[in-house]
Image: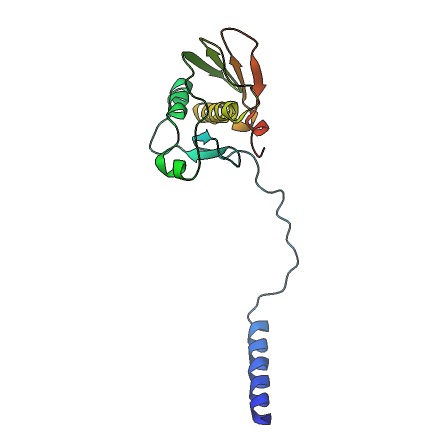
Amino acid sequence: MKARRGAVAAALGIAGFALAGCGVQPSGVVGAGEPASGLTRGMRLYFASDSGLRGVPLLDTEVKDLNAVVKLLAVGPPPAEQRDGLTSLIGKLGGYTVTGTGHRVTMHLDGPYAMSGRDQGTGQLVCTLARAQSVLDPKTRADDVEVTTRPKEGAALGPYRCAEFLNR
């Protein structure tokens, strides 16, 4: 039994010597600055879920204008994302025109706007249009884009930023 303890102690001693001799010095906490924040680059469509908005990468589709992005959003999420509980709440918008310049995007509706402005459906539009504007104008950060909805009748809604609708 003593021989076995001696062998174990010798093995641990050799292992400790090997680890200490490998040249790796112990270190403390290394500061790396602030964590990454803001929206990532690349086109995403934002869909509603029970836990809030989720961005879905738009793969193999080139973004050419803001109006086309709203049409893609209205189609709804792909089947795999639908199975994960994602849906589109924007419904039928009727006629609309979306324009963007720099950090401002405006959606003009030919009819009324059925949503309240502080709902996930509006958040889908705001976040998707902000992302699309930053893809179309790479000098513009998606975090900085403000989206306003102007129905034909009634007051304008916004301007809103995507961050107002995330993590709610």
